[in-house]
Length: 456
Image (cartoon, rainbow, N blue to C red; front, side, top):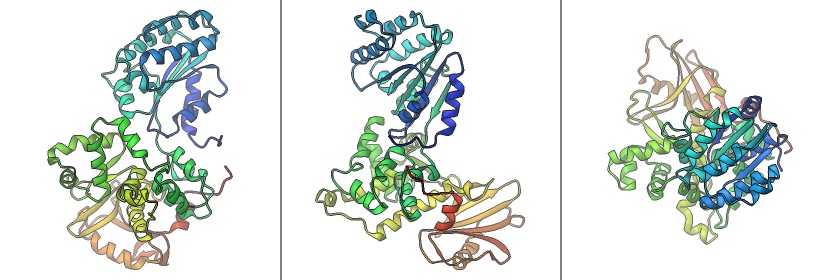
C-alpha cells in the first residue's frame, strides 16, 4: 500500500475527537477522493467495527452489518438472530454491555440512506437514546454528495444537528499531489494536475507511468482505459437527469460559458438552465466567474479539471478512440492548458500574493485574466497567464497597462502592479513606467510550491 499522503488537518481533528467520550462523525466527498483511506489511517491502531454498505436492498445491508457486529463481540446469539429493520438492530446494539471504547464505522453510508427511507430516523433514535451516553465513536462516510448533503446534513434530515463534526474532503493541493508522481519534469507534473486535479486515486493511476504523455495516451485515449467511461459513472450516481447535466458540462467545456449559450446548446430556455447550474456549482463541478466591472455578467467554467479534460479530448474523439486511432495534438493540448493554467493561477493566487481578492475583467474585445484587489490599501494587481515559452514580459505588461486604464476602481488613488505567468521568458522585467512587475515561469512555480522529488 502506498504511504499515506497529507490530510494532516483531518487526522489531527479526528484524533482530538477520539478523546471525547463519544462522537458522531460524518466524512463525505466525491468518489476517489480518499475518504476510506483517511479513515483507515485514523482507525489503524483502534478497535471497532468496520462495515462497507453496498448498493443493495436493506435486508442484505442489515444482515451484513449484523454479522460485522456479531463478529466483533463474538456474539453467537446475535449471529443467529433474524433481524429485519435498522431500528431493531440498533436497539440490540444499545443493550450490549460495553465498558471499553470502540468505533463503529459505516462506509458508503449514502447507500444505507438511499435504499431505506426509514434508516435515517432509526439512526437518529440510536444517537439520541444511546450514543450520547455511550463509549462509541460512530463514523459514517459516503461518496454520493447529494445524499450525504440532503439526507444526513441538511435541516430536513432526521440526523440534522446530531453530528459532532463533519468533514467534506476536497482535492489535494499541487504540492501534495506531486508526491504521487516520480516524474522528472515539473511541466509534466503540473499538466497532470491540470488534467485530473488532486484526486488521489487518479494520481495513483498516473504514477504508473514515466511521463504525462504516456499517461494520457494509455489511460484516456483507449477504449479500455481507466478514465474512458469514468464521467458516466460519476454523474449517474449523483443526478437523475444525467443527460441534461452531461450536456451542460459538455457545453461549458466546449466554450459556451454564458447562460444563454449554455441553454441554447442544451436545448432549454435560459431561465430553465439556472437551477441546473446552481446544483452543479454546489457539487463543485462548475464555478461562476464574475466580471469585476459588472458582477451580474458572469461566465461559467468547469471547476473540475478532470471533467474539463475528458469532455475536450475523450468525448469529442470517441470514434477515433474506439478505432485506437487518436492522439491529441500539441496545439489542442496547449489550447486546453492555456485555459486551465489561468484557472490554476487564479485558484492558487494566495501562494504568490497574500491578502488579495481575485477575479477577472472583460469589456467588449478586451480581457484581463487576473484582477487582484486589496481594498483596504487600495492596491490592484493586473495579471496575464500565458501557457507559452519564451514570452516577452515587457510586451505583455505594456498591453496590460493599456487595458488596465479601462478598469474603473479608485482610478486616481490606487497603487498598481503587474504580474505575468508563463512557461518561460525570453525577456523579464521588474518594473514598467515605475510600477512593479512580477514574472513567474515554471521554475518559479516549482519553487513557490516547494516541490521536490520523493520516493513513494
